[in-house]
Image (cartoon, rainbow, N blue to C red; front, side, top):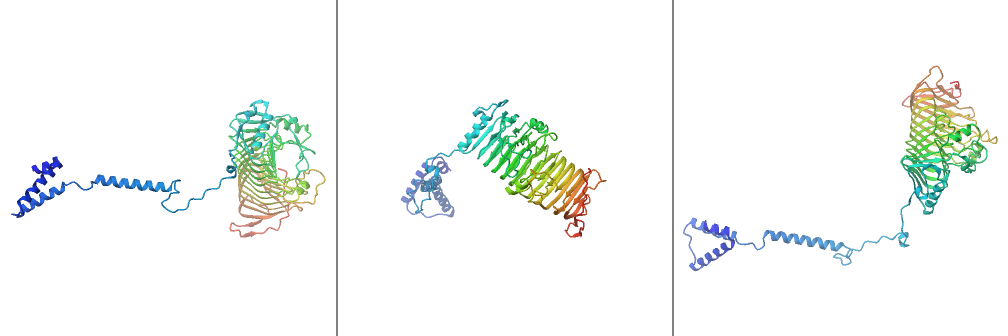
Length: 531
């Protein structure tokens, strides 16, 4: 036990004792084991001394060497892959270098488009100071820089009409309101639109718009629901009193321009049409509110795509004194000569009120043609008409491939209208033999309540309406004493259940699109304008 105690208390003492015992054993010569117990005792004693002999490399020292080796390997790997690596361990070809840009090779600094504040150009948002010069200077600065953003901060910014430029964003902050000056002497006169040949209300020149642009690219008008206010009240009064010698100007007009986005703003009280897009391509109008009094504000259309291509109008609220959306393409012989159709236009997820006219109209100025129009998920309420197509002899061209889908009519006098005798002309030189072709029009999932006349389709012997389809229609009517589904010179079909009972001009099909009854009365007329 004393031997074990020494071994435990001091490894050096154990080693000394083992050396002394080995010397004594050597001097005594070979020993003979007297018994198995003695042999076991001696073997245990020898094992005890091997147990306490120090190892050649301790476990902790071995772990240290392993860690050192790993660190060295990582350092070598990193060194191999650094930019010093022309001295490489492996014969790997260098990575190709990216060619410098033209601007970098010329030593130019490429900056992001500048952002300006209207106040930097002397703007004063008190509702009384005229800010035309500030807007013009800001737009000139953006044009000189090749693009940029003009921020209109909170305030009331009175101005005469001004022009936009390409690659420009007009940003209206929350609480910002651009006000149109009401004195028409500040509004410039412009030539009539080439596809109209006429000012629209008067011969000769027309007033320009409050915010105008032509031959532009990449224009954005947006903000945090700031407002562009045309202050049209004085214009409406003078129009009714016939005190104006020229056609009133729109609130915003963009001509022959492309890549246009208008979003998250309010347009209100326009002197004339609110947003007029003329011969434009690739336009999006989204999240926009358009307002004018529902009575006493003549011709204040909401959005007018006119000879436009690829237009999206979505997620808007429109309540105005004329058509909510009016798709146009020129007027009589002038529109025929200009020859720019409106095509690929979508109106969706829009709420509209129009006590005077219609929620969504096509025409009547459609002499360049209108095709490929989708109107879907639209709610029209407290309006004179729901969705309408209007044209006349002299217009020429066509209305073709028009789809109305998921339309809700609420408190509407006439829900669906096609009218082919809208005889309003710029002058007497129109050709009455230039008759439009109207067809391929479908109405699917049309629902509503409190509608006096759900359908009034008035074709004629000159302009019959062809291939009209009704599918899934149920409209609650106010007065069952009158003919509520009216047709004249109409050819088409009804698929499945339609309420109220469709006119006799249409073929009947079941839901499997199997013919149930073919009409032989397509040219009969059952139109009643007495209510």
